[in-house]
Length: 112
Length: 115
Image 1 (cartoon, chains in turn orange, purple):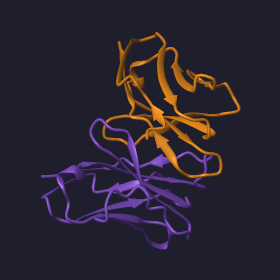
Image 2: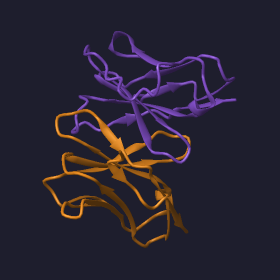
Image 3: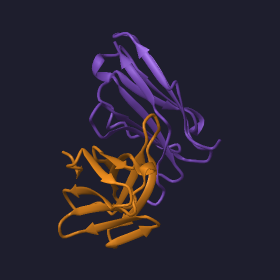
Image 4: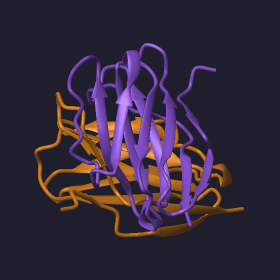
């Protein structure tokens, strides 16, 4: 019973353009959504998060949008850089709990 | 070097053998998680430790899997009688509090190959 779904296994974007990574979720019990980035042979690293009481959170080139009516989460990277090439995982967790549920990941390739 | 440390980084074993994977969390982090990532899959939750509380073992796929956390710090994940479907990257993570305002910090993982 997958509770976060990343439907695009891969995405290619030209350097300097916007990368949009998407994630859908199945219910609204969970209060925090997070994005992690993973390079080959390394563990995932935390990128940015958003609480379900917000619609948007921004950190430099990275912005996360939460559309609660559509149960949809997206990560925007602008401008994209070759160093952003990695696998991106969305994750969710419930306020006050410890369990994180991860999506299957989207492999982003930024072309120079 | 204050990150989460996992060893070995790679392990190749024969089917039927036992393996032990080790995780050194970030000092002071009370919460420790084990996840695994099989080829083409997301991160699958295995087990969670928080302080002195009983661990949440609900993600362990079979009774061949077990984990310990000694002294509230180092953890070992043991897989007995390994099977080929156990081949995956096993990731350990720690967090300060184990709550959603305390993101997970992952190690680089142990890539397990069962031949």
